[in-house]
Image (cartoon, rainbow, N blue to C red; front, side):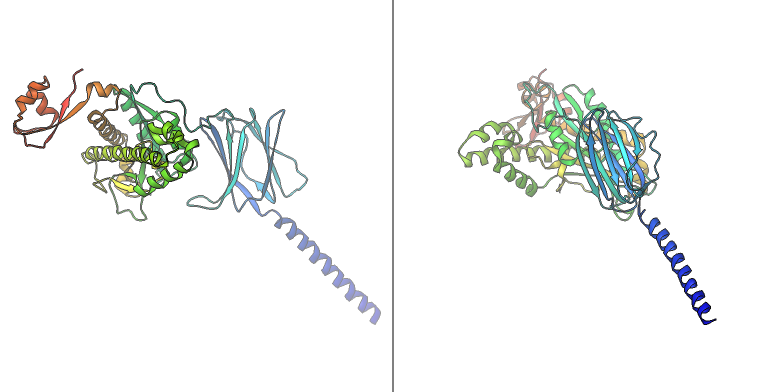
Length: 446
């Protein structure tokens, strides 16, 4: 009897152990799937396509490329996919198809991107930030894209080239308003309206740094502006704050410290970077006199800053006519898109997307048009008063004349072959009286 009891007890413990092992193995088997792909976003751009995988936790991945046919293969360890792949590539010029493929591990997922040709790859993971969680980012770059920072200079200025940079884009929405308004959509809408206005202006031409819903790297924005021979760059944004109180527009220029920092960095590599240093680039590259190189580069920087501040003031004078100003004078900013010392530039915060009233206005087409018109008028007014040599504006713009002792409105009108009425109109004069030292704009013949 005692032997039977011991035998029964042993069998009971063995059964419990087996059951426990079975449960533990089942739990362990389920625990191997610790991550999941919850979203896949595809952002085609003129020179590249960005693919963003949204994951539950930090990705554990490997990737490799195959040819004949061209494919990119990504293995996600201990991961399941919950995203439909069928139509992901339907509007992309570089990806034919997303599909899965078998792997040795049952707990992993292999995704295959069938490509139209071979591309340069950039693959990196991103930690959670803002509204986004863990991500894996893949950039497919065209191999024939321009990698040079500068190309041949224009033989003649003719049109003044205005670069328009719509802030953010693609997977970077910028600030988001309380009603779900994305800054990237507001900036692109205003940028497109500004593009139309500038292209209608004889003597000016607009080029878009971003023309669709895709992201352009901040450093790439200035190099694209340079490649397109931009004479002036305006970057469009919408401000935000942690509360809904602040409101109004503002205009920013690069800080003196940032400009000097960039200048110093370029001077250290002046043989490679001479094209970034303005019209004296060739001399700066070839001279053995470091003092001369510094002087020429510093002149380029000072000219760029001067133009930037000048345009900023003109744009502010127009913006204040149609919207509240958060800041009434140009602000110094450390923005990457403003860093180039050879391209004058401003950044316009068109309003606070975090303010309920301004969020509504920023999505209103009529207000967007008013903002675009104000920016256009400010830029135009500056370059009409300070036309670039050889440009169309130089032949139809304004000269400047400082009033001296003994000069009157009638004397100046006769000297410059212009009517007194026209001279008063151009300078917003209410009477015929002039004061010594006053600067007048004189319309050029043409």
